[in-house]
Image (cartoon, rainbow, N blue to C red; front, side, top):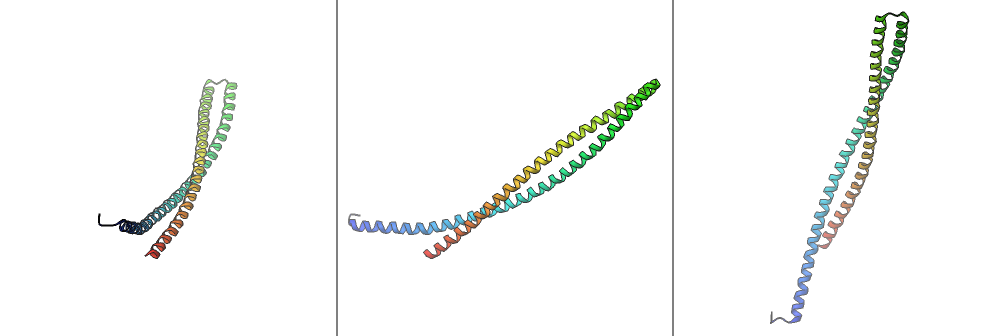
Length: 182
């Protein structure tokens, strides 16, 4: 090193720096292309996943709609049963009144038993209707949640599609600049 002058050392240093920068840019170009390809693959996977989630959300919405229809049908049937039970209770009360008027203890006992049985059926039908109304409200909440999820998944898929287009542009730009730099 003692035989080298400062100017030669400066030239060597400058040459080494230029060579390093040149190699770094070629390497950086290849790394950018690899990164762009990796990003593009990942974004495509995201789009496919979003599409699967959208399909699943639609399936869940259809299922919730079927359950809502079934719950409404059950509530209508419960209402018919309740109306029928009320008619039976009115008839049972009239039979009990008539039994009291007749004074027959066996008829009174039978009328009371029939009235209690019909009251139990009436309460059971009321309970069934309350349960069906709860299920209907639960199914409606689930459908609203699924619709909201569907909307969010569609939004995510649009964003991922934009990312795919952006990654393609970057990949083509990097490939073009790398080819131009050779």
